[in-house]
Length: 95
Image 1 (tube, rainbow, N blue to C red):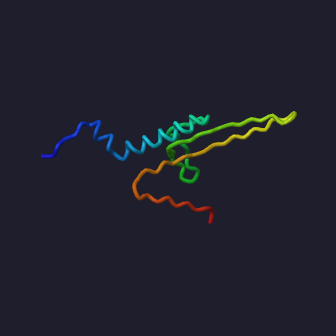
Image 2 (spheres, one colour):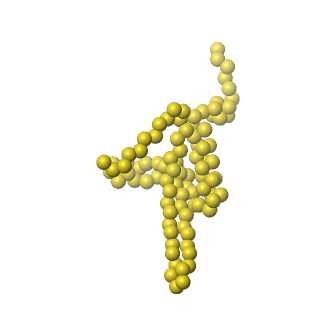
Image 3 (cartoon, rainbow, N blue to C red):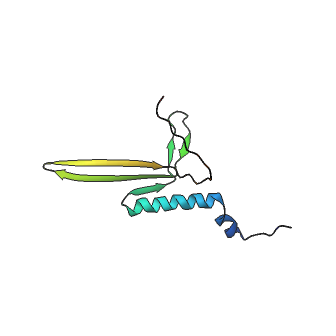
């Protein structure tokens, strides 16, 4: 018979737990630096029409008055957390 562990210990050792913990760490870092983060937002894939989920999105707005004008910069970032061991991320530009 195998020894059973309490459910909280099993969960704490799972890959899913470590993944969501990494997502919350990134969310807290963005929040600390004045960003407005959102955990697990959904978006519609323009090609397939399917709903997809991101790990994290954030936005920041900077404003600066220059004479009579106001300069506004809006930055949106999208974050995908990779926590699987030996996981390789490949990115390609347009071909």
